[in-house]
Image (cartoon, rainbow, N blue to C red):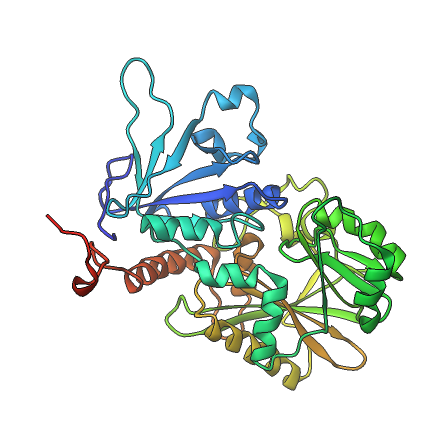
Length: 414
């Protein structure tokens, strides 16, 4: 699987890297930003990288027009300049994208690549769906593997995992979308939410980027806000509202060979909840460029424009717990890639809880690694190490060409 393939420019020394982004997910637009940032930061002396865009309707495209943000969403004209493809899942060829249409004259060659970088966020992508497809096709890919993605992108399942590890989490209630419609009786909601107390927070169980998060003061308000959640997710999770809210985020990875944690960030906000636009649009129209350390081309400011404290002054025992619990979770889930772990706390009482885990954080959380206390890692170097880890993980999970053991074979072989 790690054999060298000839890139489009004829250089046989470069690995071909396919950066996948977009997706059939409410977080499609954020994923496009992350994917384009990764394309701009990849070390082009080592790799030949190209974009693979998955549109909101699920169609897969390749083409140079996908390298520029201003071309999204694809217009009718831009659709003429891309090729729709699908992944070849035959497991002995490496990464291969097959064009879905063949012209009348000539032919379109399959597009081969060595490794995939999934830059997805949310449903049908970051949740293990695409990772499972890559596993099926025996394609090396960066980031967390299928099992970890599936567990961690489900906030309810994550809670049970963290409780089993004795990592502090807030109490919670699970609210499932009705089989018909989006409305749930207030009496039932009151029964579910009363043990949590009011106000409480309701959010989708499988989404990130603060999409669909709401604060409610009673069961009536919960009933009113749930349809907006159920439009994008089939499960909502409710938690007590934390007074004097403070958030701490840290990334963890073993791409360098040992498990390390990044800088800790403390996002700043004047509001009670950090919403989607504060996270991703606080830099205005989000079109301005800035030279990022570790990246060879200017990239969109995106999340960097959010005001945050990096490596804030916090009690040593709190910092120690944040890092210890992050590593404990990472080890338990057989972690890979560079997930970001989000904690919330009460700034006055000093209580802190692990809130959720992002298998693929926005912009891959590169700014946390560039500010790491022990050893700074630039974005370009982080991507290189993640690509190298992808080959290692793929080899570690490899199966024989015929995966059926000799004593379990019921059908004759050739």
